[in-house]
Length: 281
Length: 145
Image 1 (cartoon, rainbow over the protein chains, first blue to last red):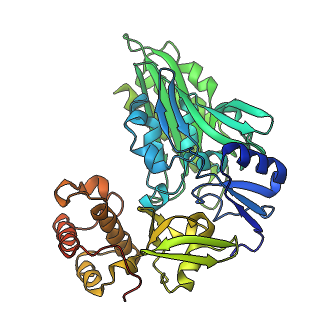
Image 2: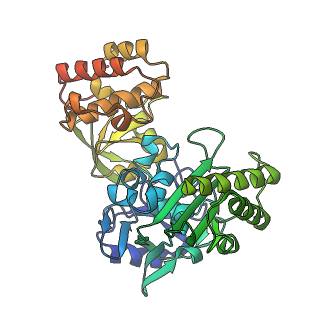
Image 3: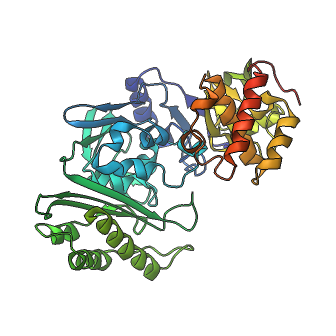
């Protein structure tokens, strides 16, 4: 029993949920599946706001791209044909990488983002897809590019708002994506995860590159210098090696009980090379 | 706080603290043993030790007790090398699929049981499903074992 919790609210609308979150401020947090917040309840939380009854579980595919509601479960995203069509299903892969089904059925895409765990799997994939978050606030709605979403360890730009949906612009037809994760065992947190989306021209030259890495720093991040290093170049082994070297140079890996900084550097280079080789093939 | 939920087909009103884990609530009702964290919440397998009881307000919960049979668990234990938690997940997923009306012949072992029955021989799984379907035990009643 979490004795710190004094209230559990069931708002009837998103507006009511936003109002309550605004009133309670840092003492309240939204809860959907609970798999992020229940095992790691922040000590300041006194009130939880159930956001699972607000109609935020949906995946909509329109002319502009995908709109995924914040309480859509990881399982729903993982098996969605619409999501699988976007850059070879790079997001689908990140939602089902080793997690057991009872966790995927409860965990939500919104929870994975707002929880802002540095080892989360969907953030690198969404960064590589140029996604943006739509946050409902007391003052109104705000759209935040995912690149600006993660501020620090377990801290996001959502603040006292409530994440409503994630929008993913439709990638070009020639976009190919890969998500790779390395963990000690299936279902464990990533030691490193990498997502890459590349648009290849007919001549095999990279027209657009997005490369994001998670689990090495306090927040997942894109490496634009490495992305630029591939622009207008073919995905040949020497170019791939060069880009992997740039990424390894740029990262400043965290050290924890599971891996040293050198090991994470090695893994990052290896996964980057592997992802780009998979796209090339 | 007062929450209302349906457990194994029976409606209940329960008083609990807002921070009560769902697994603790089920244990207090003698519906969750030490390995039995897996339950069906509105037909989906979830871990009750990662959810609060308050999240289940207004929802349907099915625990493995609904199946009420040690015989099927014994049958499973003969063919499943995993632990009781894995067998629980397998039984509940099988039950959920059958209750949803999915015919045994249309089940995909790779998709419908992915991550749950990876170590279970396909023949044993089909036999289990057939037994559950033949007995067609309705999802009503409470703890029977």
